[in-house]
Every structure is written in structure tokens, then in C-alpha cells.
Picture: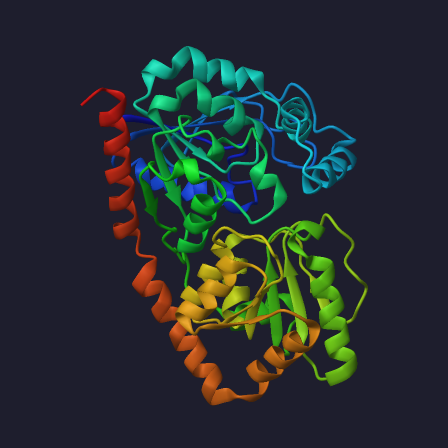
Length: 400
């Protein structure tokens, strides 16, 4: 049985994050076909990277997880350094030395993990590195380039072009996985040297691990009116402040009883407003109960590579309302006819009004959303594609 290592900056049931959740779902399913290990850090909080887990090795749902300490916490001046350097990049000024510093300041800086990869690379047939933005990928993938699969999950932002981002080093990996057609086009357009590298386009299957009960959610949290729901980290990087502004402006102009329900850890200020309800981090079952009862799931982020929360909502026959500036999110809407997108406040207002006041068309959106998931996000198809690229990279590494 082939031995596979997945590398991601955080891993565990206590971790909340898109690429991290994706890594966990893939690892658990690959474990049915391969001997799978995850190489990660001991951190839970991405804003500090402080070690939280104590054990070096544990087994989670059949997957061996090897955790390594973070040597330096995320630099306190990272946001300042990042802003200054991105301005320099926008002006055409690049520095490989500064980009080395950028990745170390961003973290999680774990030389112990890189040393393990270097010293044990012959024990694994294939390494799968998930997401481009972090130190473990940048420092780890070149150590095992001849047997690496890269899942970059990039966004159309300046940081994707950092010279240490391994997408522009054509010999840093053998196989490439893109989550969507939009992502594949972004990678090929931004880094033409990747053109010869085989690329599988696949997302993720969608699991609903419980029978959703919207009525139970409403009783438990005391929510009786129609509501939009946001699921994920509540921070500026996800454009949550813009969502708050738009929602409060909507309430001023249109009134009504509509609520905005937030699920997830807050790392930015949430306005005090009677119709904005923040539930914090909730159990997984409550998340699905809450999504199932929503009028729509709203995602204001400009930068998403797939969005599992959008797929989960659509699997529950709940339409989505997304930022049209994100090609991937807009693509979900246009390909499914199961969601709406906006580019401005007035488009946001119009979309919300449409969802609330066009019941026949709303039910069609619900049906379209569910059909889109059935057609495109079946686990059996996705795992077969994974096996194909794993076998290709393994054969290439062994000289077959």
C-alpha cells in the first residue's frame, strides 16, 4: 500500500478554516485506499501560530497526524510588513530576500517539520501540499519536488505572485490539482511555466453528516424570522465589515424583520445591531441546522478558491448570495443558477429583495442549487481523480 503525506499548516477537529477542512476531508477518504499521514504544526490559532496541541503524534479518524512545534510566533509587525511590501510589488519592485522574510513573518515557521520532510522523504511515495500561502509549502515542497502534488487554492491577489510561491517554479512539483476551472485558468495565466504540468480539476465532495432540523435551530437560538447566514472566520480578509455595512444599510432602507446570523470565530469587530446575531463557533450539527433554515447563505469574500460553506448550503437546497468580484463564487452561481451575486450595495439590496419576494423563482433557485452539487461534487468521482494523479506522480517518482 502506498504511503501518502499531506502537508497543511493546521489540522484537527478544533481547527476552523477552508483549506484545513478540505485537507481533513481528503485525508480521511484517501485513508480508505492508502496509508495516509498528515504533517502539520501544533497550532490552532492562525493569528499567532502558538503551539496548542501537546502530543507529537495522534490518530484522528484513521489518519496519523504528526505535529511539529512552531519555532517563532507570527511576527507582530507582519501586517505592517505585508502592507508595505504589497505596495512595493504593485509598483513593480520585487525582492527575493524580502519575500523570504515575508514567509517567515507570516508563518507558521516550523523548521522541525521541514527537517522531518527532508530526513524521511524516502518513506513516502507521494507528498500532497495544500495551499500556497504558508511556510510549510514554500520550504517543504522543494525538498520533495520529484514526488509532490500541489493544491495551491490561490486567490486573484498580489500575494499569489510572491516569488517563493511555488506555482512559478515549474520543477517544484509533478502534479497539480485545481479546485475549479476558474482557479486552473488563474494558475495557467499567472504562471505560464506550469502549462506542461498535468492538472486535475476537482473540488470536494459534500457531506451532510446529520439530518438538518431548521426548527430545532430556531428553537435553540431563539430565531423566528427569516435570516441570511454567514459561516466562517469573521474577519476583514473575508470582507465581513462590508457585509455588515450593506446589511445595516438594507435595514435602514427596506426595514422588515430579516436577520443576519453569523457562525464562526470573530477576529474583527461586529457591530451592535439588534438584527445581527453572532453565535460564535458552534457544533457542526448546529451549523447544518442553521444553514438549512436560512433564506440564503451569504459570502462577501473577494478571494475564495472553492468555498466549502457555499457547497454545503447548495447541497441543502439553500441558495447563495456572493460577492461577484470573486470569479469562483460567481462561477458557482452562473453554472448552477442556484445563487445570486452582487458588485455594489444596490445589487446586494436587489438580490435580497428578490430572494424574499419572488417565492416561485426562489424555489427554483433552491432546486437548481441542489442539482448542481449532485452533478459536480460526488465523492466517488473526486476520489477516483485523486487516485489517478497519485498513481501518475508515484510512477514518475519511481521512474516508471
